[in-house]
Image (cartoon, rainbow, N blue to C red; front, side, top):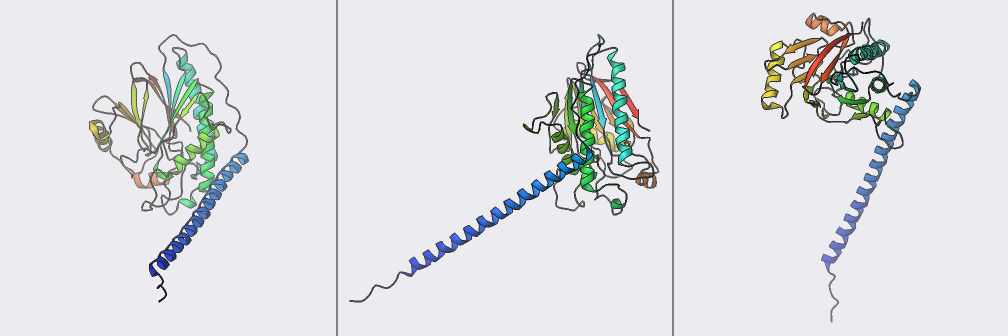
Length: 348
């Protein structure tokens, strides 16, 4: 009687099971390590942002608008178009402190102009359009790091704080505030060839921090009179009653200076012909640092808003162009869906 030969298949199956178990344990260990490192990185960024905000001082509480007499005309909505702050850009006449002074000057003037409008009709609501390039960034051209007064992290925090302050001023002026926020090309992370999604943009990150500043730290809910939703889109459709419009940065039409009037008109005509899926009347853009009102063939308007920046060397040298620092303020009649008054708010 002979001994039974060992079953080699069972041996190999056992070895394969052990090897698979070892690989699984190694993978789980790597995932736990990666998750821990990612969590630590996120916590470090969050703590850094909190520390930077604390260094800038505490955020005062938002004051409710005072009761005031209202005219008997039809209610209208204020529209603040704020764009191209280029936060931390440093020129002979512009830097972060000048940016803050000029944006606060805009808020003061917008409040006074609202008071004038209220003598005739109620203005209880405001829509704020943040149009992009709110910070200067670091990745547009080689000399950029030498033309700023703050690092990328400093830009992120300081601009977000200023955006939150603008919204606070609006909340102190109007009963309800809605923010629509668009990101620009200066918020790009890395070079144009870098494998980074366009929606991963420093403008968008600053908006998110500003929203967090205005949120309840315990519930993470926004102020009850404020509406501000994040979006990955780079063209924003918004409505004020029967008024429908688009907010863009402007680089969607032309990514270089010297964009012609025909280029703008034909681009918007294409959107209205079906390239953009929703109906709209007007378009609000920035990017070119100059104030222009362009009438469209169908009766709509392309409202191009300037920048609070001065002494833009690129515009001076490449296009022989300059513009006084300004931002835009409109008043909208929701029922008829139209702009009833518009102001170029000078900030010089």
